Amino acid sequence: MTRSAADVTRGRPVAVRCRSVTKTYGSGQSAVRALRGIDIDVHTGELLMLVGPSGCGKTTLISVIAGVLDRDGGECTVLGEDFNKMRSDAKTAFRGRNVGFVFQAFNLIPTLTIAENVSVPLLINGHKRNAAVEQAKSMLSQVGLGTRVNDYPNRLSGGQQQRVAIARALVHKPKLLVCDEPTSALDHVTGQKVMELLRDVASSNDLSLVVVTHDQRIFEFADRIAEMDDGHIEQISGGLGHKVAEHPSESALT
Amino acid sequence: MYATALKMLFRDKSKYFGIVMGVMLASMVITQQGSIFVGIMSRTTATITDMGWPDIWVMDPKVAFIDDTKPLQTTALSRVRGVEGVNFAAPLYKGQLRARLDNGEFQNCIVIGLDDATLTGGPPEMLRGDLSDLRQADAVIVDYVGATTRLARANPLPNGKPIPLAVGDTMELNDKRGVVVGISKNTRTFQSQPIVYTTYSRAIQFAPKERKQLSFILVKTTPGMPIAEVCKRISETTGLAAYTSREFTWKTIMYFIRNTGIPINFGVAVGLGLLIGTIITGFMFYSFTVDNLRYFGTLKAMGTRDGTLLRMILLQALVVGVIGFGLGIGAASWFGTSMRGTPLAFVMTWQLLFVAGSAVVIICMLSAMLSMRRVMTLEPAIVFKG
Ligand SMILES: Nc1ncnc2c1ncn2[C@@H]1O[C@H](COP(=O)(O)OP(=O)(O)OP(=O)(O)O)[C@@H](O)[C@H]1O
Ligand SMILES: [Mg+2]
Image 1 (cartoon, protein in one colour):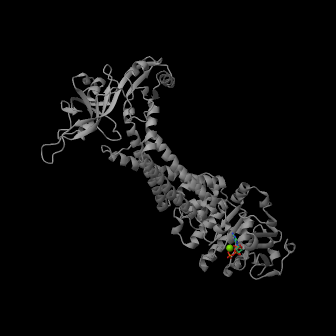
Image 2 (cartoon, protein in one colour):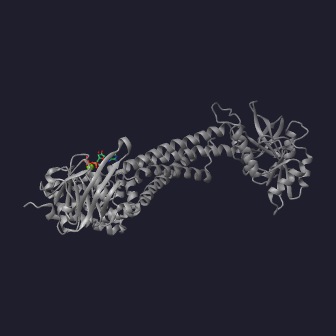
Image 3 (tube, helix red, strand yellow):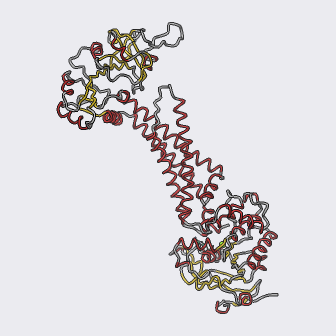
C-alpha cells in the first residue's frame, strides 16, 4: 500500500523545521549558491530521504540540519533550538548529545577497535571509559557484530563497517540521525541489510532520520522522499514515487 | 578522549615510528653538536675552572682571556694584599715554555708556577705523587694526557708504543732540569698542550729572564665580604683588572666566540640541526594530523569540543616530543660515552639538555598548532566526502 506524505507525518511532532534556508559557498565570481531557499520539516520517528543529482546541495542541507555548517539565511530549528543563536561550543555539545552521523566512507577511526570506535560518542558525552566500552559492545551485539568487538575496522567488510558506524551513531541515543549515502559504498544486498537496520531503529526509537542517497533500490525504505535539484526541494512524495506536490508548500504538510 | 588520542598515535605504528625518529634525529644532532661546543668552550677555560679555588683573579687590564698573559709588577702582590676584603692573595705564573724531548724535538708546554708558601692553584686531582712533592729540588708535576702523549718518550723497540713520562723521570724545560714528582689529572685544554706545574720561584728560573713575571694574582676574599665589592675595590686601588672566576671564565669564552671561527661553526651546526629537525618533525607531525583530518573532523562533528581536540593534538605532540627527545639524548650520550678517553671534547650539561629539550617540544607544539588550524575549521566536505 502506498502512503501519502501527509499520511506519514500526520500527528507526529516536528524535529527539524527549515524555512527558506539559504547557503552560499565563497563569494563574488566563484560563489556557489548551494541552498536557494529550502522549506522542509522532519518529523519524529520518520525516515526522510533526500535524493537528487550530484551537486544539488544534499550534503550541504544535512550539514546545516546537523549543525556542522552555518546557514546564511532563512530559519531552521532542530529539536526547538536554532544553531545560529548558539555559541560554537554549545552547538558542539548539542551535536554530541542529540545528533548521530553515518557517513558514506564510514569514517571509523582505523586505530581503534570497533568497540572503542562505538564508545567514542559516549566518551564525548562524559561517560567513563569502561562503562562506555561495555555499552558499545552491547550496541554492537544489536547490530550483529557482538563477536567482532575487538577487531579493527579494516578486518571487517564494508557492510560490517557501516553497521559499526550505525552502532556508533546510535549508541548515545540521539534524536536525529543524518546519513550521507550510507549504502553507496556497499553492494545491493548489504545495502538492503543496512537500510533494514536503520529502518528498524528509526521506528523503535523516537528518532528522526535524514538519509541522503542516490540509490534508487533503497527508496522503498523511505517514509517520505524529498527530491532536490539545484538548491531547491523539487517535490516531496510519500514513499517511493508518490508525488504530493510539484512545489511543496510546507503548510500542506503540517 | 585523551586515551583515544594516544591510541590514534601509538597504533599508527609506521607514522609514529617516523615522527619519533625525526624528533630523535633532531634532538641527537642538537645535543651532540651542542655538547661538543660546550666541551670545546670548557676547554678554553679549563685553566680557570680546574683551579676552583680563587674567588678573584687579578691581572693586567689589557688581558683578554686566560692564555693572554701580560706580566704584572711584583709589587702588585703586596698592593692587592693591602686592599680591604682580601683575605689571602697568591701569585701565579702562567707561561709557555719549551720542553726538550729525548729525541731532540721540542714541545711547547703550559707552565704554571704556584705560590711557594701555599702551593695554591694546583691541579684538581693527583694521579701519582703529591702536590707537596713540588717542594723537592727541581720538582715538576706533569698532567696525565701530556705525560702519555706529547711528552712521552720514544720506544727504542721498533713499532713500540711511546713510553709515558713517569715519576722520577727528568725533563728539560728551557734548558733547565726538571724532575717529575707527580702526575696530575686535568681537564684537557683548548690547544691540548701538556701542563707542567712547579713552584712560582722555580717557574721564574725556568722562564727566560724578564723584568716582570707575575701573570695573575689569585685572591680569596674575607668571608662575608661581597666578592663583587672586593673586585671593585681592588681595581680602584691598584688600577689592575679584577674578575670573579665566573666573570673571567665568561670573558675567556666571549674572547673565543668573538675571535675564533670555532664557536660560529658549531653554532651553525647546532642551528642547522635545529632547522632540519624542525622541518622533519614539523612536517611529519603535520602530515600525521592531516592524514587524520577526516577522523578529527568526524570527532568534531560527533560533538568533540575544539578545546578537547586541541589538547588531544598537543598531547600527541608532547608525547612524540618527549619520547623522541629521550631517545635522541640517549643516542647522543651513548656517542659521548663511546668517545670518552679520546681527544673529542664532549660535555653534556643539564642546561644544554634543557635548551635542546625545550626546542624540540616547542617544535612539536608549533607543528601541532599548524595542524590544528585545519582541524578547527570543520569542513563538512572533508567529513562527508566518500
Ligand atoms: N566547501 C565548499 N566550497 C565551495 N563549494 C562547495 C563546497 N561544498 C560544496 N560546494 C558546492 O556546493 C554545491 C552543493 O554541494 P553538495 O556537496 O551539498 O552537493 P551534493 O548534493 O551532496 O552532491 P553529491 O551528490 O555529489 O554529494 C556543489 O556545487 C558543490 O560543488
Ligand atoms: Mg554529497
